[in-house]
Amino acid sequence: MSKLSLRNETFLEAVLGMGGGYVLDFSNASFANFFGDLNVDIYDEQKYPGFGDSKANRMRALWKGGSDAEVSSSLAALADYIEAKKAAPDSSAFCGEDITDDQVAKIRKIAEELGDAAQTATATAIDKTPASFTTEATVTNNKIQIEIHEDIYNHIGRYLATGDHFHAVEESYKLVRGKLREITGKERATDAFAAANIEKLFGHQPANDAEKDFFEGVKFLNMAIQFLRNEKAHTPATPLDPNLAIHYISLASLAYDLITRYVSEETIKEIEDLVLAKRHSYRSHTAFYREFDGGRWLRGLQLPDNMASSAVRKVLKNKWLDEADFTRSYDHSNIVLMRLELVVDELAETDLDQLLDLPTQDSYGNDQSAGMLSFLEFVQQQHPDILSQKAKDWIVKKRLE
Image (cartoon, rainbow, N blue to C red; front, side, top):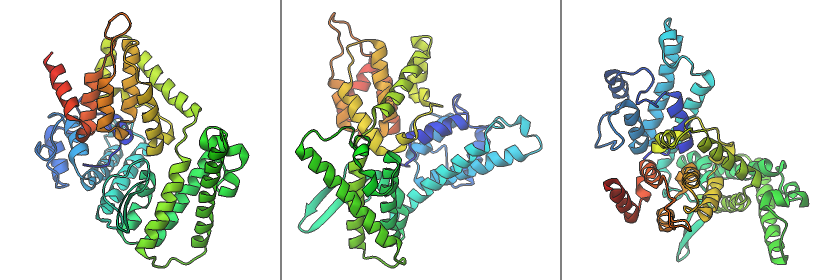
């Protein structure tokens, strides 16, 4: 299964014109030949199951069931194809003539990122299990199996894959300092943790002495990253003991985790307002559900850049799950599920079961739940592995009604 994110998938669907089942100007035959040249049998439903037979659905099946290497090579080839078509004398007849150079560049960037992810598949320095939001570990005797923060791993994976532990450590420190600069405007921890920035980092001033001590601890942890990084920056790149490197990287992961748990009210409001405006843009329930099916409403939605961070998505997921209410109205139930589709990459089996256990009747006994079947089918398309048996049974039951 490729690591193509929902955000990038939404972008690609819009650029490649996949809304009507097509992909650019390919016919069925030329589509098969295009992928055949890449050693990909795009119509192999056993290898790339689900979705359907249209070209757009075959593409979605590849994105979901294919490897990072397959998706990367196909996207790079599609970027070449678009550029060749636009440069041809009869380019005005090409349905993708409006695709901009920036959009082609972004396709190439996505391909490159997936290519890097494919290379990290051979990494042995850390566990291959997908990283989670928080830093989790299991201990056996004196050995720790640890999951570092996904943002850190995605940034340094290519160095770990090649055994370049020096740069893996250096880049993990850079990411922490870059996040401090993004949040506070200051890269040095000694400046970033000034009193004026505490609310930017933690959302509020310390409520008591214990919390004040915790904030100070996070500050000194980041100061350690600052000084350790300074030492690395002024040292020639030399082989670094893998075990020591993992300790350094774990330190960076913890520091990064602790400064990314807070999402500002402004960011939350911006995203929630986007969802609300999108829901209200449909003139009828029929028009909405036509777009809600399969997550089509997400296409072209311009989200804040920080939604690319798993840390931000995790915070939003927890907030929106806690606030989920299916007893108010059909529209509100729709908005609850739209929000959760934005963070589908962070959902877990227990989250879906929690939603299915929520009450749906208002004070008058009327069922106000709406859109759950389409939502669960979307989750099934994106991450079939997180559907519990309870959710699968619920889907089957609703389809038979």
